[in-house]
Image (tube, rainbow, N blue to C red):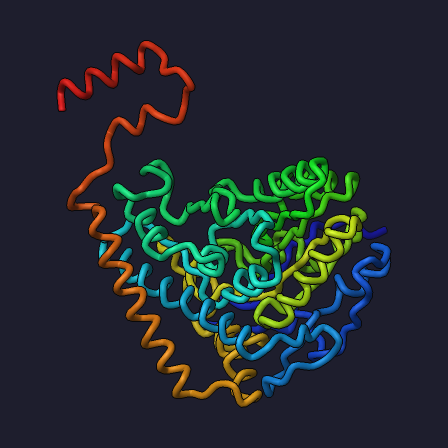
Length: 409
């Protein structure tokens, strides 16, 4: 009789080895069926195991998931993805210069946020994780506001109380970021349930990484979403690496993350996260399903974290340096650019001009943000802010501490 053995997921390639993405279950562009959004959950099992793709290798849009967006709308999406990337690159350099303390880029994952934001209503509530800055840019939050938060200066939306990149934008219906990952899912489910109770047509959408699916909050959220048919879209961004841990350790080796949706009783979609059109179409489908009372959808967005996890990370210590160049789903911005060129609506010269314009936009915003204070130069935040926004009526011991601070200033 054989003895039971523990299974340890294999990492496809380590530094110095040849990148290996043979584990990624691909499907040709246009090959996956598109059912009515009202279908029973059981009919989404195949969608959760396959890969919804629209753009082929030549940049042509194929198949039933093609949302048939106009070139003008696609150019807006391309601009927002590129602005996100240029902003990220500038802030990464700024951190390396010691002018901000911390940063997290979304390099290679821009379509995950920008395309989803385009497919949702502006009134829908978004619950982002820390690599979804594209949501803020697509919703029109100014770069100056984002930069001031990174600087913790006098215009910091978080009043100096949050880690850099933990933005919020109440007026744009974007919930506060939390560094405690997976909290986004139960928060979004609860918010969407409340909206339904109030008779609103608004829905919620949330994003977490595949590593966060190992957290209890993920499972709690799926249970509530299933039981109450919550009008919510739950996005798992499978970018292959949770800090230095390969996605197989979170359970992505034997079945897709999207398959967990039908497993608990909600719809599941597995989507090419580097295909702007596919992300848009899948989000639109899930939003329609939620609004017509069919409940939640779990979307797995298959993408790749092209850069470091954060400015505190060195990915060359745990994966091949050249992995992104070998990633089979390519670069989301490059793929949308090629699609627009294939349509005759874009050119390399227009692309270069847009990048130059965006570089100037980001540089101008940085100068404006610094006028509100930097890490080393004033103006500074009012220290009294540390005593506010905690108690409705300030306790006596804190009132005395505040007075002491003012006397000794």
